[in-house]
Length: 159
Image (cartoon, rainbow, N blue to C red; front, side):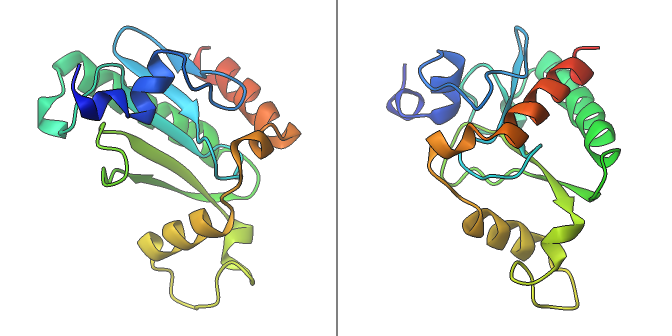
């Protein structure tokens, strides 16, 4: 096991050393879908391959297929919720090298003060600002709205 995978939050979730709010939403032999660990936005999901992969081009075909299908299904489910206007899907890999995708529902309230003060939407900047403003301690993620969303998604994704 490499040093990077030992300190990897995605690998810690796979090994059940770190438990996401409400537990895992979906997992199979290729991928894991969980709620974000520390940003208090219902439906802000993290999707990643089970094995430690640091570059997208190293994904197996089954990993690519499953990730693409889950992105599509989660996007459909989340944009069907009241107040969700857009879905941002982002992968940056700076803080956590394990390739992972942020499935980030952009709610209409995010465009109102104090969250956003500009007329033009810069999605990358909005994503970054909202994450910073709504970051909380992990114990604060055991919020009823987050846990209800996790249950709803677990039932919807696995249906």
